[in-house]
Amino acid sequence: MLIFPFVSTSEQNTMPHRIPSVIHSFYMISGSNVTFVHINTLMTWPVAQSYCREHYTDLASVRNSAENQKIMDLKPAGEDVWIGLAKTSWTWSNGSMTTFQYWSETEPNDQTAACVVVFFGNSGKWADARCEQLRPFICYEGKQWCLHMQDKQT
Image (tube, rainbow, N blue to C red; front, side):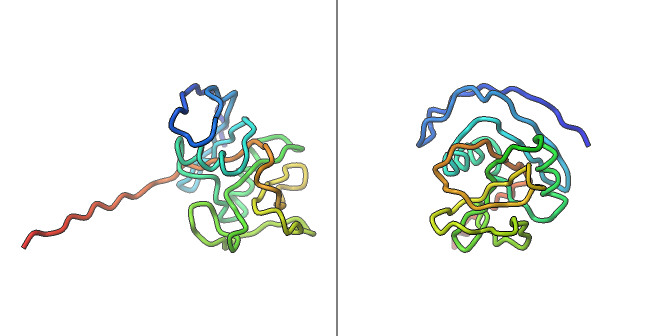
């Protein structure tokens, strides 16, 4: 498994929220048709989601324990990051239902928290958190399919 450091600079003038024009660092790791990217810039969950959708595919959807481990491998123990799970029926930010969950023993436990973080210091288990908190986050980049339809003139 290889981890590559990168530095990215870009202007974000089209975003609904102010996003820093310089991303201090991020790390990528690939596997099973998905690339996870750790963005080490603090953002709220909604702003992180917008950033991921603008530059990658979306906030990370974690489909199995292997993908959860890949996310854990991106950052040392003791750090926590946003992933794409939200309390709207606990669906991923891309709209898919969750089939894999890795909650900490007492989680989810906050009725006012609607977003999910991965705690690297707690074996990569998940916890609910308030979406307005500032945290680094994990984006994913995967294959996107585009279907073009054209009405047939009769």
